[in-house]
Image 1 (cartoon, helix red, strand yellow):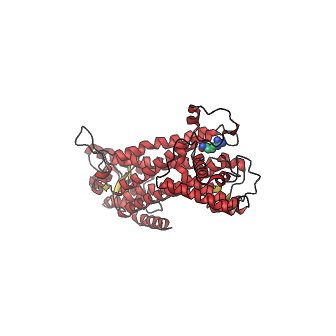
Image 2 (cartoon, helix red, strand yellow; image 1 turned 90 degrees about the horizontal axis):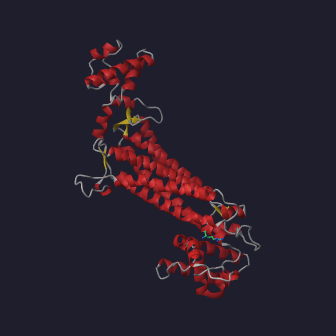
Image 3 (cartoon, helix red, strand yellow; image 1 turned 135 degrees about the vertical axis):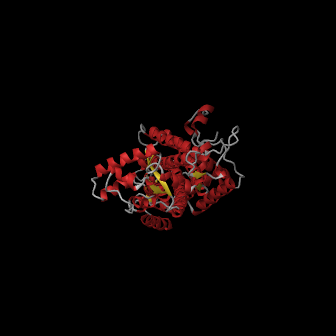
Length: 458
Ligand code: ARG
């Protein structure tokens, strides 16, 4: 049991207490960030005349040695230390002696852990943003290839109006683009350096907090030392943004699972992204899509968990906050895994354009356009709606589509029908005439795709 704080204690910590309190099993994840923060701190201490140049050099060399040895596997991070901060400091003292004991001057583990967690999650925000961007590149590629791939659009999971696969994927492009916006906002808001806040009330040493903030690529130092050590808002925001990403992935997965069924057959998930059954030889299951949908629950869980942990905490630091780590790490790893797998899955997925098009042709997806046809000919919309409704009923009875009726049959329902009805309700017309910005018409879709290209090139 290697602890940093034995002085005022007369007894050894109970073993169970030690284990319950320790965080090394999970906070070792940010050993790099811990060392990076310490190096910045030491540079600043020397600049301010608190350490000598020689002490600074000794400490930095010691820290760099620890980093190197952890990376090459010769130095193992073990549960003998309470947390990653103790591990680094104890090893430094072992290696360089007395100079190592000066590392923690003007610092507390409270500002140290706040810094480490911020440095770690800041990198992860950037990595996740990049993964979302890679997903957007694949979505936009599929959009480009499917501007004329007709499919039914649904409301209430009932066929509604025809649109295109490009339009459908375009909806997800917008969702994931907003997700990137959220990540970028969080990055900007979290990018203030807590180092130098001490335990809660700053320190009497003449620290240069602007200097350490600059060394660690922050926009500047935080403004209030109590807030600095007890702020976990950025984690709550991050987990909220991650939950939204998962919700989007989950909805997309739900659609792909449906489209991949024998009943729909709109898509076929690649063999490399499917799994079989131990008993039913014919099966090819969309397990990856289901797992992504399923894992949404644990990311939501992390958000609710940290919100609940934080809700009753008085200022400033409380040990409850140690609970922020495992759930955040798990959510980050889960989202990164899901994004990478999902992108690979849709990148290799086969689209059955003929099946989608045939599906769009039945189910009366052109009924709105048939009503609009009558409106153009002077029939008030509400009357037109009624006429087409009766026509649909007639077709259901005959088991045919509107397009299959003869002009004479149309005329039984309204005199204004003419030969031009077929052109007016063809799938191509139904889609192509929808040319307002945001609609599926190919002319406007091409504009959106060009704007997506420009956005992705930024
Ligand atoms: N392991 C602690 C955490 O994650 C580090 C800070 C400890 N500070 C303290 N005052 N006990 O929050």
